[in-house]
Amino acid sequence: MTFIGHILFFVALVIVGVSGNIFNLIFTIQQQVKTRTIQTVGLVLNIISISNIILVLATFGMVVSVFQNPQIWCIKPYPLAIRTELYLMMTFSFISFWAIAWLSLFYCIKVVNFSSECFRALKRNISSVINAAVLLSCMFSSLLFSPMFSLDLVESLEKNVNVSDIANLTCPMPSFTIQMNANVYIAAVLCLLCPIPLMIMLPTSIRMVVHLCAHTLALKKNQTQVQGSDSYLLVCKITVSLVGVYLSTLCIVALFFIIRIIGQFITYHILVSAFSFYSGMASILLTASNRHLKEKLWRLFCCRKAQEQTSRTQTVVTGDV
Image 1 (cartoon, rainbow, N blue to C red):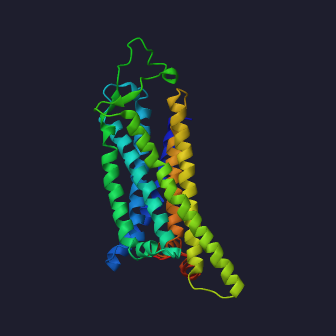
Image 2: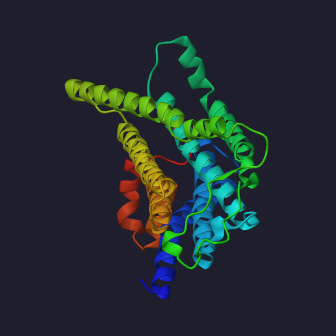
Image 3: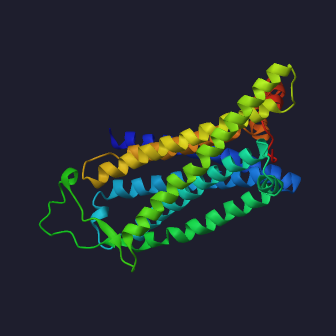
């Protein structure tokens, strides 16, 4: 691929990953300003959109840095730019993943009926709980990944290494220069990025699927209809789809880093593509689940009359369910 081809490829990926999130962010904030309220779904949508935009741009920035200087991982000390890009990538991927987990929990508590008094109390206060959880996740992630600024090479690159042989160039493994147990830190970060959010996403999604299947069977049996059941079904589909996108992205990113760690060559196109796919698909799914955003999108493409009626019956408003 030529230099121009690389540029066009990465620019296209950035557009795919960023454009939908910018659209969601602008029109969600516009509605919040108009109504003078910030409800839970709107807050989470804003957090996800901002996180995804910064995630894609930070990944693109890191790839540009590596493209300009292929030996950048062998420089001691690491340039501040590459440390900042790594920090932003990790921080905002963490925020985005956890925001989706909290959104899944929010919808589950709102949609499913619980007999336990504890869950009923949680249902009454779920908006406040999720709002606090999302904001605390943002604050926690900004502190959790601050050691990224101390990342550096433990030992300098040997002078006799042929740096002109870029394909075969291997650099010493980086480490944290501050006093900390690196293995414990990495294990904690990995758990917080994958197993723990997944432990929230999967049970809540499965619980919603079970509830809505039972609800649908009951409606067919009694031959009755309940207003809003289609909206709840769409919420369930969107939530399950977001979990699928999250898992797919984690698998691709994990594969990229595993291949890099074992010393094999893999292009950074994979990393940018993974995060662009995640950000783009997340924005599309969140737009599809939101009546206000969907109406704005149809107006943008001059399809207002034909689509507004279907969007009112098939999508959920920005406000809490």
